[in-house]
Amino acid sequence: MPTFAIGATDFLLDGAPFRVLSGALHYFRVHPEHWADRIHKAKLMGLNTIETYVPWNEHSPSRGEFLTTPQLDLARFLDLVHEAGMHAIVRPGPYICAEWTDGGLPAWLTADQSMTLRTNDPTYVAAVSEYLEDVYAIVRPRQIQHGGPVILVQIENEYGAYASDKDYLRALTALTRAAGIDVPLTTVDQPNDDMLENGSLDELHKTGSFGSRASERLATLRRHQPTGPLMCSEFWCGWFDAWGAPHRVAPDSARELDELLAAGASVNIYMFHGGTNFGFTNGADDKGTYRPTITSYDYDAPLAEDGTPTEKYWQFREVLAKYAPVPDEAPAERTDAPVFEVALNRGIPLWQAGLIAEGSFAHLPTSSEFAAARGFSSYSTEIEHGGLLAFAEVRDRAQVFLNGSPVGTLSRDHHERVVPLPADARGTLTVLVENLGGVNYGPRIGEPKGLIGPATLNGRPLTRWSAGAVLLDDAEAIREALGSAVATVDAADAADAAPGPLCGPALASGRFELAAPVDLHLDTSGWGKGVVWVNGFNLGRYWSRGPLATLYVPGPVLHAGSNEIIVFETIGAERAAARFVARPVLGSSEP
Ligand code: GLA
Image 1 (cartoon, helix red, strand yellow):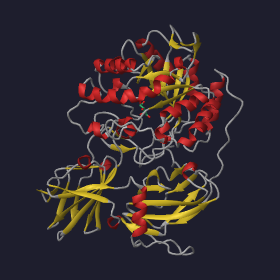
Image 2 (cartoon, rainbow, N blue to C red):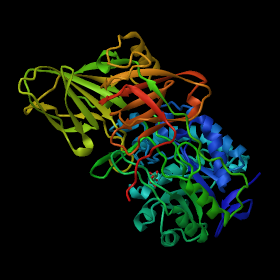
Image 3 (cartoon, protein in one colour):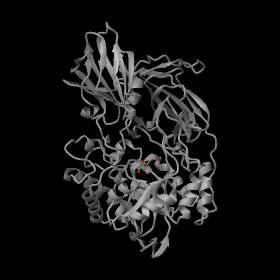
Image 4 (cartoon, helix red, strand yellow):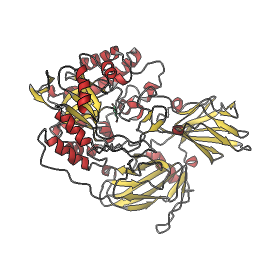
């Protein structure tokens, strides 16, 4: 059987020096029917390894559960890597960061105030061990010495940027070894003395995360990892985008990659192919200001979100060819996607859709209290007079309605938390709150969402609330709401009529025909803010703030024949129509 080890200066594959040329590809961000294609294209660029994180919160929405649905079939993903003749690196966290909601930590875990996350707290480590056992049951037989693709497994993630509990790292290492993981174990940290010191153990191989100034960064890493191969486990070749900010690009990354490889280092390109934050899976940053990550995780990576090669792909291929053989075969360039428009000719205001599951509370609950871990929730209370409505905090965006009419919006990223109500206000106050994504870095990971109390009206507490989740997880329920209710939104009623406006918050749907399933790009410009499903598959959020102006529709979710689109628009769209365009629009970047 093959072997993989760490030698005095190099990784050793079957005893011979081996340079890891890896690319990050998160199976949970790519439609499963596209996995083989993306892996193959990594090989064609000149890579020999695929790296993935494992998102605990996706696999375990409740404790004790470990989902292996087609989207989460890690075993199949690793088998496809193997079939492609490539190696694999697995990074199971338990914390993964990754611009993934809550950095991958499950909501049921973070809701338990009795444990201290990412430390050697026995309650926390017990939960982690259940999860790691499930992951390692998949990884163990797929290690290289058992005839599989896995050559490296990472412990935690940039732990030195968070804390310095070595007993925790020891506990994770012991759990990993006890589960039969015998391949070399690594850690990754930013190339900073404190982080490298705090984030690892002597028995773990230290690697770095950076996207530039390779020689200097490798020298820092060398001080902390005096022997063995140097590796950049996250070579950042692009970056993620936040709503309302310019699209980020890294045009110089081929030169930076060349510098890294010229220094003899091994690499994992983060990301080779970023994919998409489908559904409500995106994370957020908060270093004083909350900044949610957009739906596209294109990352300015060599392989674009829709799986087509970019200019960077060809540049990287050329650089890699200087250091290792690159296959002759080359992937096809992007072709234009079909361009057409669909009338959203059936619509219903959210308040009439019967999708809100409210319970009664004698205080203002967070959405974690009614188990609305993701997406939207609704709050309502009765008021007798107007004045200043205030919350301690809004997580993360609140639209306020009085007797069904909009009176204001509060945005966490603008630090807004008060809204004036008309003096004669009286009746039902309703607040639609969106969880825009769990913070994935730093101390706010896993914080409760929804409205944070106390809520006051003119300084007096508002304590009687009805509150609950907006049920958007089940596309069938949304379809039923749209099918059974009278269409009350002013939408197009005939094929040749100009589509009318769609006034949010409302759900609307339409149907379209395709000759064959192909990738599409949904143009969301002209829409306000919301979520889209195609044939029940949640494409993710759109927002007029940009920079993103299209949503990627993976071909495998479409059918030859009739297809359905459902839009949940929270603000409003001038035309109740969905336009599909030829190419993605990621938005403009800063000059
Ligand atoms: C760090 C984390 C990754 C990711 C990148 C930024 O390196 O380890 O998970 O968040 O930053 O994309």
